Length: 130
Image (cartoon, rainbow, N blue to C red):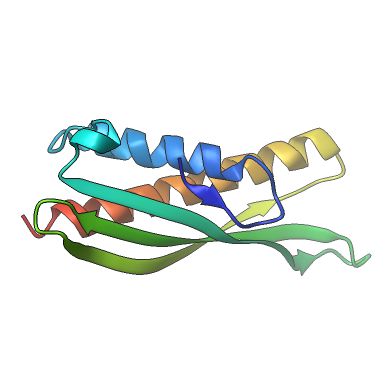
């Protein structure tokens, strides 16, 4: 499970699930318990921000950006050395309306897209060199 250093509880759980699913969907590696792994990936969700970026004629926000950032560290347990350290950031936009429920749903969909983007980039970082 990724750690969470943001002020938004539970975001790291969905990020962890998305990353796990991306590696499983790729199929080139097997996810195992820490004690039997060759490569240990640790991560921290260290940045979360929502920012209004578009407004209507009444100065009411109509579009937002949601941004997340993660710190990644991978340790090669076989060679006993750090394999990779990186910081990844992504940004997704979403539109809102007067309906609070649909606006929150749009924010959550944007977060899912952000998780998916980070996840696919991680798979690429780790597996494409092979």
